Length: 210
Image (tube, rainbow, N blue to C red; front, side):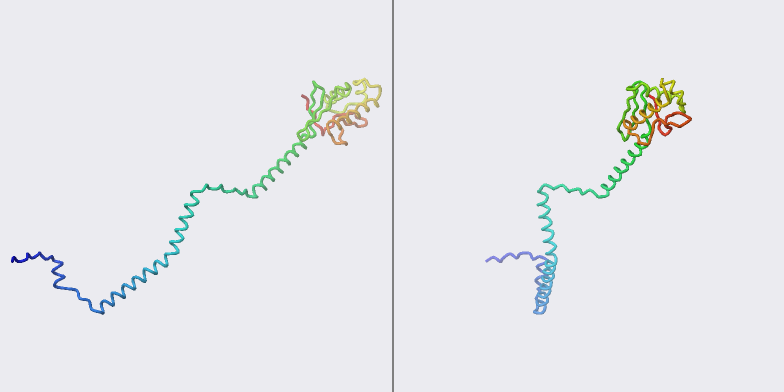
């Protein structure tokens, strides 16, 4: 009977054969203890990390859910300071308009061709038509040309009036119509009279010819 052919032995096998590990009871107990300690450490790590893992999981789920829905626009709430600023600006505009109306309230535009006096008051035009009475227009033209007092006697001749009372009547009617049509203050006379001097245009009222 032929002898069995021996298989070649490896270096590892040779070491294992010559140094067969034989664990005693004490070593086994130590390995078991180490294994239990490692297992406990792993369990503690898992226990500690579990809430964090749950939070990450929930955050991912919410992100996925919100990402799939249409985003609602964020409502803009206007700061109240802007409203206050706009109110102040509007008050400032109204104040400027008031000042402007006061500045131009005593300025009257005289359209010589049409024979009308126009006054801009707060953006609105008020007019006085002089063509209805030729003597009133003539009186105004003369006083504007002289720019000073004109004696009553001189006006009698210019206006072809029979007396000084007739001149005074024309002046009074002129002023009454001017107050009503041009919205002048009741005590503001466009034509002023002074005893011994005659009549003139009120210097506080600026009449500009066009």
